[in-house]
Every structure is written in structure tokens, then in C-alpha cells.
Length: 522
Image (cartoon, rainbow, N blue to C red):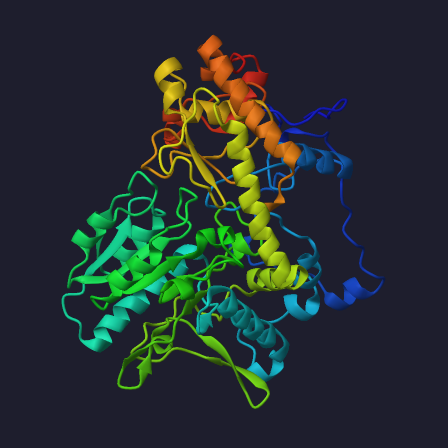
């Protein structure tokens, strides 16, 4: 056992909490029972079969040691509150803290999802108003907040498309067209809904290759899933023509809303001809996003007629909050709609966060957020223009929207330094790496999105770091290939890291290294 001497930030050999402290130290004293209470309660009889044989091994540390230990561990993490997180297509953006006041309020936090509707009219009003706002933002007619995240929103959308064709008796409608620049979850969602995925390529100008699309569209086409702006950060210039083409064979057009913050306030999916759109509250409307959740992926539809009085909204696999006679109630889907995707109305905490964000911003603020995101992206590309080692593969000369995809292919060809190495070298300079190797159609891709929240100084520093990395790669590629060196964990053996069963547990490595039985990290 040992204590900590002096100040230092966490590093790879940060001890486990069980390895700290001294015998007899305490960081917490349990409350004492009032006189007479113990006699009243009586002895607690624990059945013999569940009694512990040994005392639990608990850390013997002081309160101060506990606080310092976990603060040091927190310093090993990088988050949106630490600095820029320019992850393309994940819009790690401004997360206002004001919503926490309402999320933590007992009047919300203590609600139960299965309470009687009459006892939760307040939160139902919030959900109803959020539906109305999202309908306006997307140009759609009906919206459900039901899906837990974007990928589940996609599944809800394609299940709606399947139900549409089933109700109409459109036999043989078993193909879903997906551009090759799409998010990876698009083809996965289509396959989960039972469709065959038909991929169409991207033209050199960054738009969908129209000749390939025309060849792919047929009587078997159930729909088209497309992101606009695309993962290249480019607006699909022929979207109206695409919508007409898909509708001509009674296919439905599905909008992936991951990149809505590139056009919000300027263009709406409903006005482009889309029939179904999913959104990401945890991307576009300020709720925190990362580490796999939490999320919320509302789905909105144009309420087009289907058959026999049924409309598209009747086929949504999720409830809608409706207002009747001044009261709010939840309308759950009924056959022939697909069944609900989860047991509750929505991921209400994330929706409430987005609701507060939209209240704070207002219509003008949402539009300004888009303007700032687009301006930041194009200013970054201006700074990168002419920098040796990086290139743009699609849409040269076109304005980008919310994000841009650079290629480190020229750098790799000249020096052997890849996009992955560039990302690790950015970590060495105190920056979070962008999304790499996506979209797959861009070799050595660096997908960068600053959103509306970054300062000019941070954008300039990021561009400067990329320029310095390219220069250092040409001068001394081995130095970049060994990065990072300034992080709490240096470059790891990726083969072993991807097969954790073949690796000695981290705590064991730390102990062996402290005992001098292993050398230092290199």
C-alpha cells in the first residue's frame, strides 16, 4: 500500500485504487444509529448460505486520495468540454449545460415511463411541441420521437417503407438503393428490414452518378436511402430529379438526417421530395453524444395516402403524442404498422435536452448555427488549400456544407505516413483526431467537422498542426510513425490490442512494471 506524493497528472502507470492508501485510512464514516434505534430494529439475520466467508477487500484511502485519483483518471480522457472534437458525421458540437437543470429536476427525473397519461401532461406537452418543431424543420407532416438513436431511426424508416409496399401489395419490391458514400448503418438497416442493398457510385463532382442510378432503378426498387448533404459535405444538386425518378416506380425516398446541421433553416427534406426522414437530437440539437449513446432518432413522414384510407403515418413503428380537447395522449401504432421498437415513448431525457436547446436558439439561432458550421468548414478548407500531402477527391472547387473530407493519400505515397499516423500525431499535439478511413470511397480519408461551435483560433491551430505533420513526415517520417509519445498511453501494438485475450491484463502490466520486471513503454 502507498500514498501519493506531490502533484502529477495521470499516466499509464496510474495505480489502481486498491493499490493506494495505508491500512486503517478511511474516507467515509457511516452514520451512527440514534440511541434506542438499534434495539428497535433488532439484529439482522443473514442466512448462512449467503454469508461471506471473508471480509471484502476494500480500498483503505482517505477522501482526498479518492478525489485526486479519479480527477487524474479523468485527465486521461478527452471530451467536447476539453477541446475541439472535429469528428465528421458525428457532429460533436456545443452541448449547453442549462438543460441539466431541468433533466435533474425531480419533477422530471422522478417520472416513471408507465405512469397514467393524466399524471404526466407536462412532459407529454414537451414531446408534442418537439414533434411540431421537428415537423417544421423537416417540412414533414407527422413525427414520432420513438427511436432510441439514429440507427434505430433508420430501421424505423425502412420498416415503414416495407409496410407501405406490403399494404399496397407491391410484390417484388425487395431492393433498397444506397449510394456508396452512405453511412455504414444505411445498408445494415436496409438488410435488417429484409431488403437487398443496391449500391450506386459517386460521380467525380461529388453527386450521385445519375446514369448509374437510372440503371439501378427498376420495378424492384422499394426506395432510396440518401444523406443530403452527403458524407463528403456536399449538397446533392440533382435531388429533385432523383426524387422524381424514385417516385416514378412507386419507390419512397428516405432522408438520413445525420447531416441536417449543414442545411437547417435553408432547405427541408420534405421540400426536396423525401417521404421519410430521421433526425438525430443528439447530433443536431445540442444533446451530448459519444461512447455509443445516449441518443434519440425521431422519424418524420410526409403523410401521403397509401391504400383504403391508410396514410403513411399509420405505418410508423412508434407512438405519436396527439392533442385532443386540450389534453395530450399517446397514440401507439396498430396493425398493419410494424410493432414498436422499444417499450417506452421515447428516450425522453435526450429529447428534453434538445427541446431546451431549441428554445434557447429559436428559429433564427438554428439557422445561424448552420451558417456558422458551413463557414467554419469552408474557412478550414481555405487554410488547407495548397498544403502538400493532402487532397480533395470529389467535388473540387465546390463549397462544402458542415464537413470536409481530406485525403492523406499523397502523403502516404511520398512518405509512407498514413491517415492513421496523422491522427496519432494530432493526439501528440493535444488535438483530438478526426474520423479516419470514412467514407470508404476516399483513400486515406480524414473526415473533419468543426460544427458551429469552434473558434477561429482552434480551426487555425488545427490546420497548422496538419501542415506541421505533413512537413515533419517529409523530413523525418519515423517520428510520425512512432506517434503518439505525449499521451498517457503511447502507441500500442494494434494486433494485440484487438485480441484482448492474448494480452496481459492492464493492472498486471502496471504492477510488473512497477516491480521492475518489465521495461518502460516505448
